[in-house]
Length: 176
Image (cartoon, rainbow, N blue to C red; front, side, top):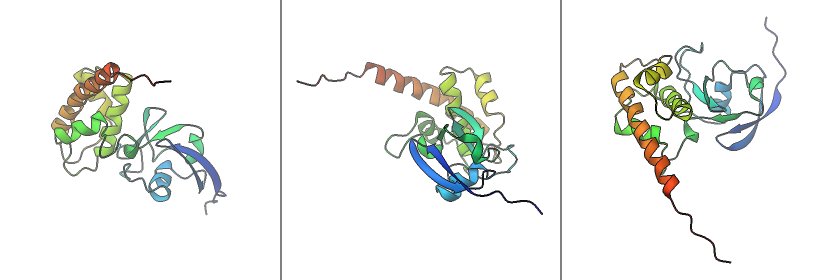
């Protein structure tokens, strides 16, 4: 018989919001995100950290949320698929996946997008080998790899355009 841990309160910063949840300290972060916070971007795939369906960003790094106990992420920034953008302002990677039809069944989509975002955040101009390396631990059961690779290449272009547009935008001076 396994000994249950006493539930504890955990303060988390998820998608820019501060939240408090009560959970077993050993509970996988994935369960908290999906069951307590109703964030359905990260999926339960294998529960072993092998497929990538549960990927999230912790402090900008793509990690498998099924393998991280909630007690291990105190004072860290968590971003899920829902925190990347919204319907009116998609993240460039989300936009690229739509434009390039980078999904078939969509189950791997969360992990592919999160991994691509992490890649572009650390390397805004990746080569094909960099893209393939960043995505190699994310499994796609439908074989949509060609479209996924095209989507990440497109995301590079869209990200550069978004960066250029924000760098050239003029902020009007306020009048005193």
